[in-house]
Image (tube, rainbow, N blue to C red; front, top):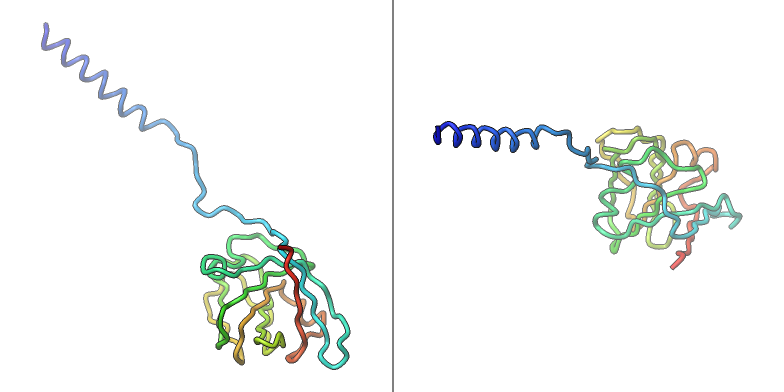
Amino acid sequence: MKKAIILLVSIVLTSAVFSCKDKPTEQKSITKEVSFTKEGELTLKKAETDSIITTLDIEIADDEYQTQTGLMYRKGMLDSQGMLFIFEDSRPRSFYMKNTEFGLDIIYINSDKLIVSIQKNAKPMDPTSLPSEGIAQYVLEVNDGLSDVWGLEKGDVVAWRTDN
C-alpha cells in the first residue's frame, strides 16, 4: 500500500510539472516594429541657386547598432521624414535593403555635405549591395521616388541641425 501511495504521489507531481509546461506562454516578438523618432531637421538645397528643395524631420543613426539596423523592421515613414546615417570616416559606402519593408532612395553625401550619388527606388527586402559612386561620410534614406520628385542631383547641398 505504501508503494502504491508513493507511486500515486509521483504520478501526480510529474503530471503537475508537465502540465505547467503545456500551458500557453506569452508570445514575444523577436523583432518589434520601431517608430520614427525626430532627432533633428535636414534641408536639401540646389547647388546652383542655394534655393531650398525641401526640409525633412530626421532620425539619426550614428552608432554601430543604429547604422546596421537603419530602417529595418519598420512599415514605412512619412515623405516629410528621413534617416541620416553619420559615419566617423569618409569612404565608399554600400547599403542594402535586407529586412527593410518599404522602398527607399539612398542618398550618399561627402564630408563637404554635397551629394555624391543617389541609389533610386531601392526595392524592399532586396539583399543586393547598393554602392555609392564616390567617397561618402553621410547617407540619407528617404521614401523611394522622392529624389525624382524633388529634382535632386549630384552636387546638391545638404545641411542639418540636431535637436540635442
